Length: 340
Picture 1: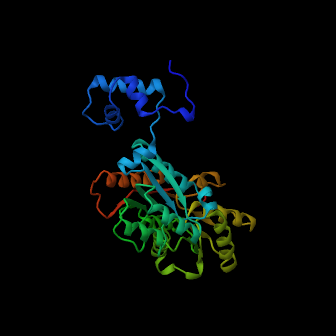
Picture 2: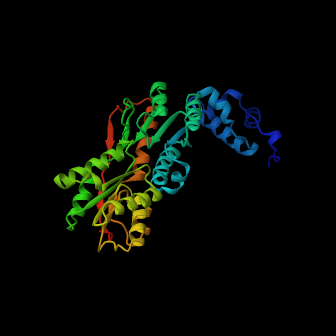
Picture 3: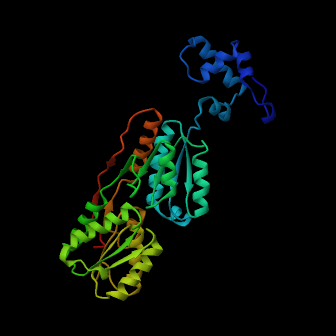
């Protein structure tokens, strides 16, 4: 049995070559999965690697391949929302599953300030990641511009408003918002408000557009409250404004489940019963939707599948494949529960 090594006596490629009885070049070809190695030599090298406890130096490998074997995930949200939003978590897990299968590491980069923007931009252009997935991209996003100009393999979750030339995967937010608003109208609600968030990105703009289309002539701009984030706290703030503006409202479309959860608590505090007095619907079908009381009627979007597909787009580009520059849209569905 080989002697136990300390970090200062870490096994080298020379140790592997000596134990296997082959040249250093043969060991290198085995490590790089090259085909010009006999089966006997490959078996001997693999056994020697195990016996001497050789661990490949990733930094040295990267100097040769010019690959970091890492893909960055950029999230344009405050740190608190990154931890609070289960939708982001599901997207992240979908991305990680695809990258793990391809032996790539996921590096998460959360942008919460101008300082973060400068730091992340420098990181992305420094060769530390081979590609990047971006979610929650805003209009006028400097990071998106850096990525577009650098030519690094990339994909968006959602369609950036003002950046072209990068593939994306998303859902039809407009049609989904219109469909759930129409379903809410069909329950007999006459004064329906909306808590609209994320209006500096495609998802927020499209959900508001779908809501507006569904109401048609019944649309009342006073019944739309704009809030900055898809968060519980923004839902609380938005619902309070709606009740102050139109205390007689009888329906609310919240642009995310987190917003709807905040709205539900405010309605309860105001003595308004859901759904008897006010029908309430959300969007995402996230963990928020099933832990409220009553559970939320909402739009299911396949967050994990969105993340996986975006990662696959980046991996395909890294393999030299042409993925096109358009968008891929995944299906949504209305999930009707007791809140409306």
